[in-house]
Image (cartoon, rainbow, N blue to C red; front, top):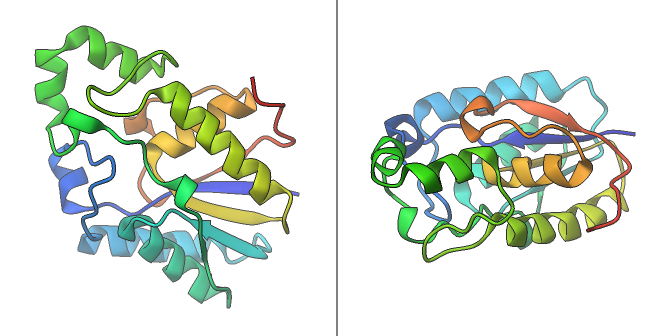
Length: 184
């Protein structure tokens, strides 16, 4: 059985290169098109469940996919993107220039990295592991529509290689290796 992880469709703030975190902008027209394309790609994988973050960019993407296959997405608060504290709403390019060491630790996915005024990647990984354990105990194959940080945390928890956030395309899905190892 498979568990798929998909990044929500794009927002205008994503397109501007901003850190969103728990900000809640709507999908852009491009993001809606990405959600519709994801729905087409997922129609033939036999999904029996769709889970989503409560943030509207993920929720709307999940609704588009689930609606195309006759399912209703279930919202799980623990799938929310990391609390990115003082970085939320800021341009990634500005942060890379102002705080190159912090930005490099973020790109590398170092568990000790903490967003200034926000959550650490280790905290997000623990939260993600907990919610994924609940999801994989349910019906599979399933799709989780969430955020780049959540997907990176899930991949790290599964022991898979962890790409940078920019390498995770909006509206794209990846298979999560199962079973999940026990939480560290």
